[in-house]
Image 1 (cartoon, rainbow, N blue to C red):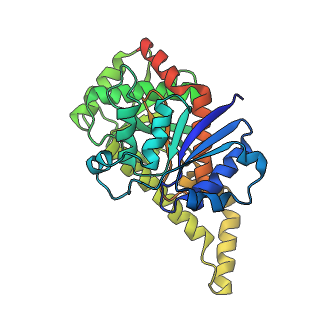
Image 2 (cartoon, rainbow, N blue to C red):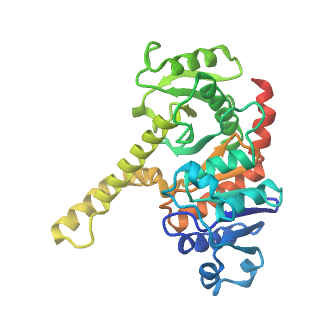
Length: 339
């Protein structure tokens, strides 16, 4: 494990430093070779570091800034008024080569827009995509992209997503010739938008890619594909639907704290007999796999859920560190020569 430094936008997310600072300390404790540069309001950050061990504080730098990008701001407005914000300053530090990656729970559109402008897409990639690892019921993981960065996509865009997803799966999951599927409303060749059908034709012609055909939403968590490709509109809806369904089922199994004894007992019995299913559902909880990467950029940028808790944000930091160590952007750039 080699040393590396990441820049964090600690003001992003629904709660900001009260989540991101404890998460930063947790990530540093778990990774002794990691250092962090925190961008945000020092008056909010410093009190949260008062009781931190000196061994962790030695690996933290604080860059004070009070400006932030609001989650409700439109992309154009956010980009025009981004100068001096915690998000932009963090990305600029990556641009200068002073750190190896960036993590933010802030405005997704702004993060994508600033990253494209400041870091630039890799040569040969028209549009970067949001990618994440989905847990499957088999215990394996599935790479899925795009998850919301590109609402409308051409066939060429989808083909490039497949290429990036395949390279990502090879290096992140140690897979050989990963199986690629296109998310569609059916498995028949005549189904779906024209761009999806055209993308299927492009993928079928590539012998370097292991394209297996269309996949429907009901099989996303069944491990039938290693890489699932979609436009950002469909991918985001599919992801949020899976996350919402998993959280609701977990809530049902957990039950409420204040309820009649017989109901509590019934919940206990239910969880006992469905223990294995309960733990599988927990893996689908977004807190368990938090962190979507902006794949196709010249450097590592990870987007955390805005509602992420401490453990979830710490996982996003750990994922960014792993991708930086694996040199994922460089691997994608080199791999593009094969396709």
